[in-house]
Length: 352
Ligand SMILES: NC(=O)c1ccc[n+]([C@@H]2O[C@H](COP(=O)([O-])OP(=O)(O)OC[C@H]3O[C@@H](n4cnc5c(N)ncnc54)[C@H](O)[C@@H]3O)[C@@H](O)[C@H]2O)c1
Ligand SMILES: [Zn+2]
Image 1 (cartoon, rainbow, N blue to C red):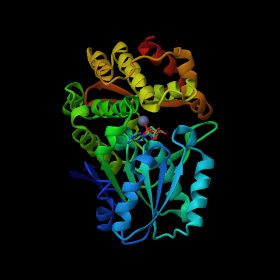
Image 2: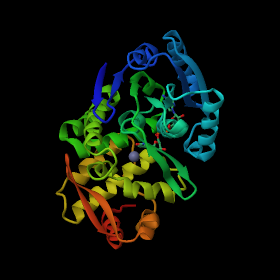
Image 3: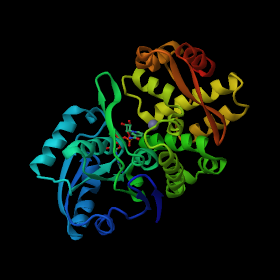
Image 4: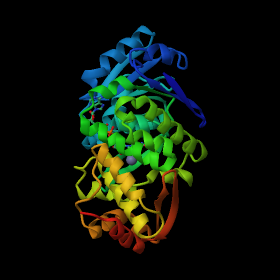
């Protein structure tokens, strides 16, 4: 078991290792006095892990109630948010109480946003159960819901009080959901260093996810500490996401986030080489790594459709778009270009 510190204001720790859910009550008692804990989870994670968490919290002296919503991105909306907030009010949670997000990125975003809104903000503990939420969404304090106009369009920044990442949970993940998380982890490897990137090539991710999660979290923690509100450096975490979001949108959100980000990462890596910003064999290296982790390296939508989807909001704002360009493993660059430049970039990296 290891704990990665995140020195935001206030600071918190990300504990990573096996058996953490069983022990969550005792661990939380070290930082949160007895109170009412409202556990928010989804219809797949609940039957698997809610009882373990509830038992542990009760044994540690907490009052526990739970709210479960239907699993999936389709629940990340105002209806679910409203239902959670009403539930918290019915349960009479006060500002000294706490919300727990038990699940993947959807639960983390939903519960995090509810915690940020309820009584203008109560504590939230993240217990990520997918690889994606472990390496990415549970850390950093971004929360959001989707609007009809697009994904993640309403949200808040709320740093969690703690993150407990029980690596045993990854054992029940369907392979495609595991792969989604691998995409964000490979993205971090490209941003971070060759040591992390190499772990995806030698199979460490499957064999020892805790090692990869810890490295990804440590990298993200550093970025978030320096740029909590995404004014600058945090933009690097969007590597692969401009095209990735466009792919998600073109698919009507039937392609999951991680798969779309993988294809988006492949497109931008090939474009970077083709336009002379990176040297071979960067794209081949990244694509091989994505394939090895059961991820796609191409997009089935035409460059024109992708550019249009990516620029739908940006065009209205006018002007420029900031792209994250991989130059080599461990070195990326932010390039702000006129929106008209996006289509040629996507064309340069597009492959059917
Ligand atoms: N806030 C952020 O910084 C941030 C960052 C990246 C992604 N996100 C968001 O995260 C979401 C994607 O997260 P996700 O990929 O974890 O999706 P998810 O939460 O929908 O989980 C994927 C599926 O796996 C199931 N599941 C979760 N844990 C399981 C387990 N241990 N065993 C078996 N099944 C399990 C879920 O019920 C769901 O059906 C997107 O909405 C995305 O926008 C947020
Ligand atoms: Zn992402």
